[in-house]
Length: 307
Picture 1: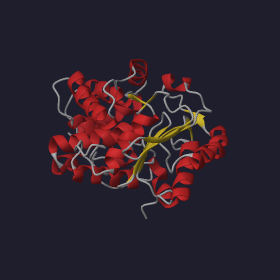
Picture 2: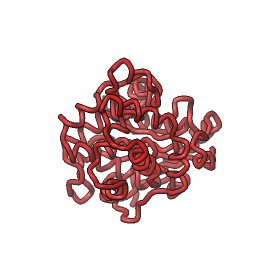
Picture 3: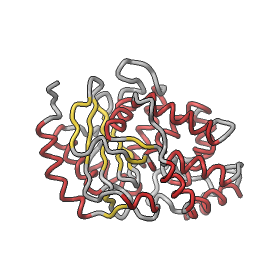
């Protein structure tokens, strides 16, 4: 079909491509260091078809911190707001996503679900008798959102993350001391690293973004995520979704979005479209350099800012 996101979007991708040289592929997780720094891809989904895909949009990559949005939705579906936000706060932080500093000053309650400490606390709340059961429930939610039943996780990346998750273990042990979590730390890390290693492509991300944008419903009108939870999740994406660049991103781009250190970004323009971007070259804060520039260009050209 002919779509409004066609020819001009391709031009925007080509204009932004050189920015990939300004970033660096994540290498603190060894398996992520294999990514091609020059890659840049995007898909946009409007509920009818994937309107436009540019670059290697079918290339698979792991969700990493984008999974925080989805585990938050699932935890809220499992327990409701009162229980979830008793364990984790709602406030943005100017600190790096993996910082332990604020835990000490706030008696171990993480500021929000989009930083690592908060995501660990949220993952702790996902119901299931085992890692496999918890992971399968999360995978099923993602499969329902993106409409691809074969979604699974990358075992190599998960193991690589688990083996090098020293700081996340520290965060988890600190929170266990204060009873924010009360399970075995390695059991929690096993689940957490596997959720971060769930593999998607840009088309999948665009469809996930569309469900959040469309009040929790897919293109057929089926509710995947309750409306109020989809609203809450989008709010966190605006205030905390781009690590400690979230404020500037809201001003420059104005689209609810969540990034991951694999280079993925999911965007959700309320009542309009979902956007999936992949560009593994990161800035110093862990966001895709070219991906952020591309979202800024898309938002400006198509007037997508929610503000």
